[in-house]
Image (cartoon, rainbow, N blue to C red):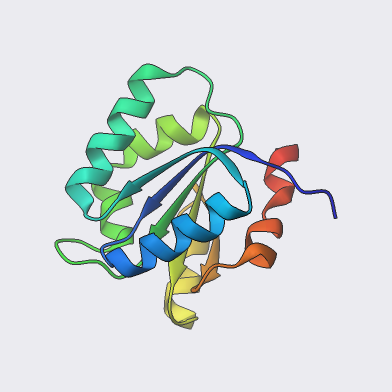
Amino acid sequence: MTSNRFKNIILIDDDEAVTFYNNYVLKNAEKADKILVANNVDDAIKILNELNTQSKDLKQSLALIDVNMPKYNGFELVEKNYDLFSSLQSKGVSLVFLSTSSNPNDIKRVKEIEIIETFLEKPIDLDKIESLNYLFDA
């Protein structure tokens, strides 16, 4: 399997231990030119707005969004900021939801939101990231 490198990976997860681990795995595997971390939805919106205004081309970028977060969950984050996420997706950011469980309701809901690419079960690992290589052809 060809190993591709993402331009940007945005980690959105309220659990700092999880973002630390995911950041470590991705950096060690050299899977991204730039890794941005948001440990809450407010930071996520700020980072994503900056990315959206600073760049016209975000091809081969990836946003990994935790389903279960306080304030609002990943679904609510996307729904409340749909225009922002839609704009990012149109510029090449693939939206991927993450969860510690493969809850059938979450998987079904991911499929119902057309701008979300897929769902991965935590923890992430290199095989799971490599499974997203098809996004480079999109």
